[in-house]
Amino acid sequence: MLIKDEFEVDHPIDRVWKFFEDIPGVAKCLPGTELNEELGPDHYGGGVEIGLGPVKLSFDGNAKILERNDSDHTIKIDAAGAEKKGRGQAQMMVDAGLSETTGGTRVAVAMDLNLSGAAAQYGRGLVGDVTAVLLKDFATNAEGRLDAIAAGRNPDEVGAVSSSPSGFAIGLQALKLALARVFRRFFLPYSPEAV
Image (cartoon, rainbow, N blue to C red; front, side):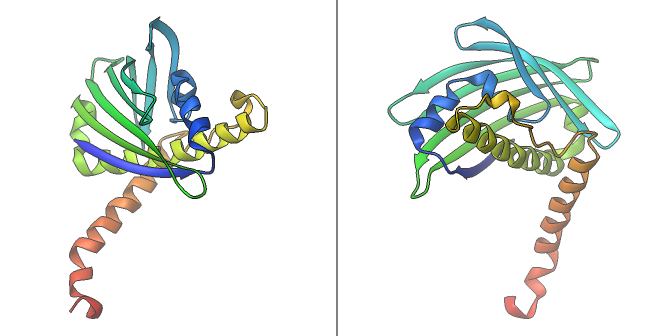
């Protein structure tokens, strides 16, 4: 499943690009993710934990940078993992690109996500909604870490935002996104403005 999103940060493109060179630091922006083992050049091991209501999925895996282009500020990352209890696997190809804006930098992300096992049973819509919530948290955390770096502080001392400490909050936010999608699909075409 292909998931695309973009966000803006109030920092110059060169600073944001330098930030994206620290893949373990970037991974800390995504709630539940940690890359704490260097497996080789541009290759890292770690894990991801995602909670959705009473269900918690924990993956052990790795991420490898396949391409990094300094001239056009793009990066391609291949990430894969297996659920610790043997309930499934995830594989994701991430393409990210930076572009300058008037006030900072736009970060565009495209993720081609393939799930098998327990995670895949939740369906395309719910997985997309959960990913959208996680990407919103990622953008907020990236901005916080970039602010700390610009101020000369240690970015690891910045408290990370997470919608999913227990999985309940992320489930509610994903449900809100799903209901909004259903509302738009079924009710907006019949509104007086649409006729």
